[in-house]
Image (cartoon, rainbow over all chains, first blue to last red; front, side, top):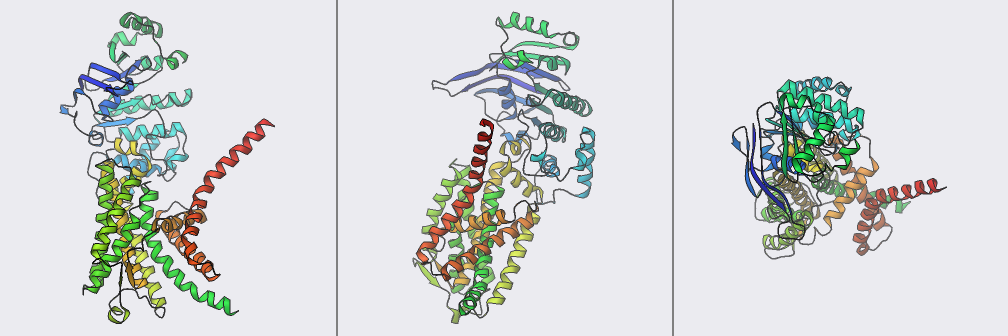
Length: 264
Length: 306
């Protein structure tokens, strides 16, 4: 479903701030893979997601989604294939627009936006039903400004919007990091549900090792722009945090350093 | 008593001014509030609208066609700003200034190199849509109100469509909009063109109302438009989130602005101070919300210390 082929990416090339993030990164996701991504500070987890989404171009390499080479497509064109949820709950939705308006913007993803009235009666009904599935009481708040909702509510709606058009690929960039533990668990539960129901292929970056082990069918660990561990299937089901840390040290020859991961 | 009557007599004129500038402010609202861009093109494009309309009219073209041409000319001006901003990556505010400067030349060329072209009342009195004369003031006001009603209806409809929605989300959250597949460069260019089209159309009405197109008529237009937007928002703030009603408030803001101005002129303030006053009023309204936050924070900190 997703092929990341031999990616090279350097930021601020030729300056003293030069940072080589990827030197030949490759990763392949099969259809229906739900991959959790974990790694140390500055390992390139978010950068990998941003490169797949097209937020910045690569220096070399190819990105192929469902057989389509998207390497040279701008971000907004790739959106046709990709649903995204960001770390900051404010980033995934428009604060000054209503809940139903936000959902309508997501609903138009992948087709040309014309002068068709955006929200009609049956659209509204559909949005209401989808919101009901979240079980957060949001189905009665279609005309509430997004900015008035809590971080968890916004993240849940962002998820809904990301999954709405059944994207080829769902990219989740630490989307529970800014939430309190209880809300984070709820949002993760919704994530699992949406991925399962829509049979999505997903890539989820997280700093929480337990979450990384508990969710998805495959886990990858990154260090210094490389994938140092890739565990799937039965072996993944049996993983523990301690075993994962030991494997990391063994594979990368370094201690696992991620302040937040160690604290959580 | 006479003074009061004289003052009252100036009010219909103020409403007329307010309506024309209200339409201009509606155009500005699209960039300033919806797209969250400060677009200085309008200082030029309002004059472009006036110049194009006046020149076509005085060359025998039907007024409706002349006004439509003004609208198109304004949209082209917005297009230039939009392309400078999105294709060349020039900050929006600077792109607007560049286009505004270009328009100074364009406007002079359109007006055959003259700084002022009059619409003679004897020659064109029955050809214009609204008259500069004070005798027909009530008809003028009715026509202007009608034009604004149509403009608000069209914009209300447009911003409810999928495309309109994409413009609003672009102004609200760029990252999210791109992630949702919106070509944010396109929406910005489109919004700038739409905005300047409305502004130039207002310019064509302004020329008829003043009985002339003048190369300097756009100077400081953005400040007057902003004053209308800000006064409208401040006075009727939080009453509603309905887009159409917000636009009506903006027009009310423009009318209040001209009320205040007619009054200070009436009270004897020399007219050379007017632009200074406009700018100060806008600075005050823009600054107060910021200062409020700052003062409240300080108070809170003091309480904590105590």
